[in-house]
Length: 313
Image (cartoon, rainbow, N blue to C red; front, side, top):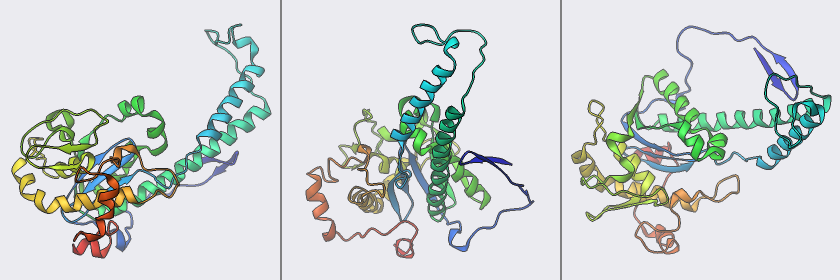
């Protein structure tokens, strides 16, 4: 195999063995159904005893400025080295062309590739860590079947940095390798982001991040969708509203605590939490400052996902 690292070609041999890969004891497969709601930059995870709202690759520091400067530099170098391939107005001529590349332009290209390689390696590591935490929660993982190509058109910069499609592929690979399974159901049949377990459907804009219903349900949109995903039947791809209604009483404190933990924790990258968390409102509908101030008085305590205390709850 050949890899380009710091502008140099590195060659290595890849050995492929039969059987199943080794799994660490701490990454054992759990039992139960886990619902997920995947967005372009966030992920909501809800299991029977745990819930979590997190940002994809929060520790990944984007290097948009460095990449943009190198791309502009490469374009100037390409135009200077190949003036015959451009019209007077700066557009590229049609037809077959020969492109010359100087040593300095090759150095710029190597710098750009190195930045992208490091971002990809760090992103893969963060994906693997989050997948390991989710796999501990259950052995059946249910989520909506999304079009990540449509995500790229609508949220290209965020998808290019965090790669939610790659995360789902990694989750499927590790779950199936450990004996679990990932079930994806079509959005058209379920519409979880607009549906309440009482049966009512409320059409909402993408900017509306809260699910509210006359039956008394009020929850963060992504967390509530992940909760409903646990009760989508595989055979019919329909929501089993009765099971969701029975489980809502015990799940509502988990979802509330997961949201409070998400909005109060600052990402390691130093950037603010995404607006899709719905941090401008509180779980009760009052100001978010008042809701966070009352967190200590509640009888539900948030533990890190996958810890022993969280599993005991």
